[in-house]
Each structure stands twice: as structure tokens, then as C-alpha cells.
Image 1: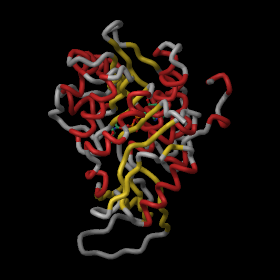
Image 2: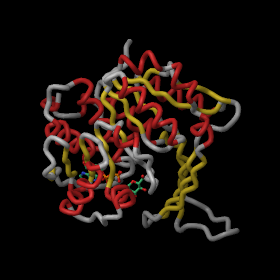
Image 3: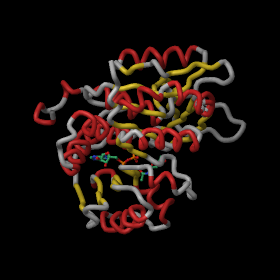
Image 4: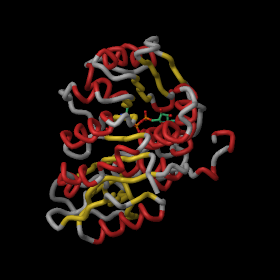
Amino acid sequence: MTPKVIVVGSCMTDLVSVTPRLPKAGETIHGSKFFIGFGGKGANQCIQAARLGAKTAMVCKVGKDSFGNDYIGNFAKNLVSTDFVGQTTEAATGAASITVNTEGQNAIVIVAGANLLLDSEDLKRASAAISKAKVMVCQLEIRPEISLEALKMAHSSGVKTIFNPAPAIPHLDPEFFTHSDIFCCNESEAEILTAVPVNSPEDAGIAGALLLEKGCKLVIITLGGEGCVILSQSDPTPRHIPTNKVKAVDSTGAGDSFVGALAFYMAHYPHLCVEDMVKRSNYIASVSVQTAGTQTSYPRRADLPQGMF
Ligand SMILES: Nc1ncnc2c1ncn2[C@@H]1O[C@H](COP(=O)(O)OP(=O)(O)O)[C@@H](O)[C@H]1O
Ligand SMILES: *[C@@H]1O[C@H](CO)[C@@H](O)[C@H](O)[C@H]1NC(C)=O
């Protein structure tokens, strides 16, 4: 199987405790519920693309531990190729310890662990697959220089690149822009990168123009329940693409659902115009916010109106 979508990025195990309130320093409190979830932006995006029917491969690193083994099982269950998933004894699988109170406030500790050991050698092992793919997707939960190297490898082979600068860093290497066909971020990331406060589609157009100037071909700024704004080198007038109004239950991972869906459409429906791809990605992400959890809320092809395919 030749993967059409290759995601180079992170895997995290989410350890979630639900408590009546957040504990203070030194305090032990009892929670009402505990669950383990699969997360990490890279893996989330890859799983969403795979659930829509994309042929996908993940390039990442987990620990040689039970969470790492479980994560590999999760990829296999979702038909994601694990040919380029490495396991290391040098660090633990990335983990996010999350405490959420019943009002929805949270406190989170992330230990990136094995994610930070993904290196150039791992990329080289995947290079033949990368050069034959249609789309590469990268984020910033691994070492930024590895994301950039992956984008450059893809770009030099004519593979379309989607870069999601999350979590945002204020002084992003300018090469991230010139090697991104699509630069896709949310409101807060756009604000960190441009210093323009983004609270409306109009603001997103202003921030987006600044991002476009840095050399990417197309900018998408996602706006939660407002959908997103797109603008490109060939059509620099910002266009607001609204989404359907839904009752949001849990918007965790909505941005990753959106990016994964976009990668699927770019790889498997390249004849669609960007606006149509984005409308469909908005719709898929809006489905993901209507149920609890991250990957657990991502729809499969069979759950969606067949007109989307
Ligand atoms: N309340 C909502 N109603 C409908 N769609 C939503 C809602 N929240 C998010 N989405 C969809 O998910 C996409 C990404 O959401 P956003 O909140 O901008 O990203 P992030 O998860 O990075 O914060 C939006 O562009 C939209 O398509
Ligand atoms: C944007 O994404 C970041 C993760 O990179 C998240 O912490 C932040 O809350 C998101 N912002 C919005 C407005 O959704």
C-alpha cells in the first residue's frame, strides 16, 4: 500500500481525571471518573484522515512501553500504516495528565517524551514513501527542526504540504512559510504569529494577509463555530466560509479533525476547489464537536452524508 497522506508528528496518551474542582498545590482530592484517551495533534489528524478513507502513514516515535504498544494498536485499528512508527527505550510515550472539573476548567501537564526523539534518521527511513505521497501534514508537537525538515523533503518532491503551527511559537523560522502550500492555524495561533488580535472573520482576514506575505500559498484561519477564513496568493481577498450551527458538547481536537479532513480531500479529491474542500472539512469538524472525547468523536465515512464523497 502506498500512503497518500503522511503525517509527521506527535502521539500522546491522555490521562483524564474528572474532579469537582482543581486541586491546590500539595493537595490530594478525589475525582469521580478516570479515562485514558488517544491524542497528540499529529496522530489525531492522521486518524481523522484515515477514518474518511485516506491511505495514511504516521511518522512518529513512542516509548517501548504499554502506552506505546497501545498506541500502535490504535493506529492499526484505524488502518493507519505503522511502518514508520518507532519505539524507543530512551523516553516514555508522550503523555498529557489532564484534570477537568465539572465546570469544564482544566489543568494539564504534557510530557512530550518520545515525541522529542523523532529525528532526521526516522525521516530518512520514510523518505521513499514521503516522495510518493500526495499530501504531508506537520505540526509543532515534535522538535520544530524535524517538522521543517519533513516539510522540505515533501516540498522538494512536489508533495502538497499542510502545516499546522500548533502549539504556536512566536518566532517561527521563515522557511516554515515558504515550504507550506497550506498554512492552517486557529485564532490564538494567528494572533501569536502576527500580533493581530483575532476575534472575528474580519480580524482573521487582516492576520491572514500578514501570514500570506510570509510566503505560503494559502492561509486558513479556523474560527470555531464561525467556520474559517481562507485567502491565497492567487485570490488574496479573504473569504469567510461559515459552518453549520451545532450544539457543541466538546470541541477538543476540532482543529485536528479539520486538518485531517482537509488532508483527505487534498489527497483523494484533488479536483475539488479549495472552497469545497474547506466547506466539507468544516462540516466534518462540526460533527466532531457534538460528542465527547477527541479521536472518539471523529466521524467515519459511513457516518457522513454520502454527498460528501
Ligand atoms: N462550535 C462549533 N460549531 C461548529 N463547528 C465548529 C465548532 N467549533 C469548532 N468547529 C469546527 O472546527 C474547526 C476548528 O475549530 P477551532 O476551535 O477553530 O480549532 P481548535 O481546535 O484548534 O481550537 C472550525 O473551523 C469549525 O469547522
Ligand atoms: C488554538 O489551539 C491551541 C493549541 O495549539 C489551543 O491551546 C487554543 O486554545 C486554541 N485556540 C482557540 C481559540 O481555540
